[in-house]
Amino acid sequence: MVDRNLLQPADTNKPLDSYLPNALHTIGMLAYFGFLRPSDLVRVMVHTDTLQLHDSFMRVFIPCSKTDQAGQGTFVTIGCVPGSKYCPVSLVRDFLELAKYQRTAPAGVDCGPLLRAVRRVGAGWVFQEEMTGTSTQPIPLLSTDTVNGHWKRLAREAGIKAAITGQCGRIGGATAAAAGGASAAARLVHGRWLSETVGNGYVRAECTSLAKHMI
Image (cartoon, rainbow, N blue to C red):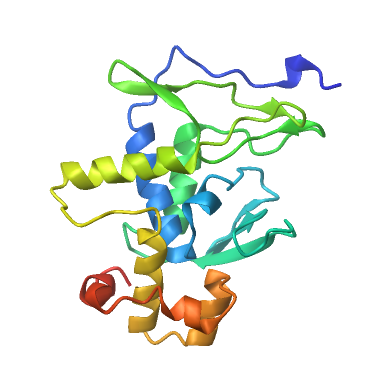
């Protein structure tokens, strides 16, 4: 049994001013550059073994997915975009610093996911759960409906009338990669699709012009 004294409680006295906007910006770029599904994003864990940050790239462990029903797990490698405000590695690094997550822990302690449930307190947000859990009582994952709901709200606030779904980041990233010259085979591996036919279905001609600006 894990000593509860080893667990890190949430500090409800110090709301984080920009947690939710930064969280949504960060996962948006993770989805875009990593070709990640919403169900992938909610399973990104912060432990240093599963979210590995390097100078020029990061490796994100996806424990299971639509195309990995057996749960063998795989790492997705995402490179830096030097000098860009959209650089996914810089955004993840900055977000981890903002959230002050514990990223290493003794056996039996769960460091939890990148995305957490929060509630509004004044002008900021506080976590609804403790900062760490246990192997038997881990930090709960957010639902994909919650993530999709936030993105749809942001789209409405920005005046975007087109339908926004949780696959938009994955579609945009695949489209930008194709526009930038990435082969269908390379996109297939990065997106973890089972066939080039399925992967090519995520490349949308109507998005090509906009996607080029994100490369």
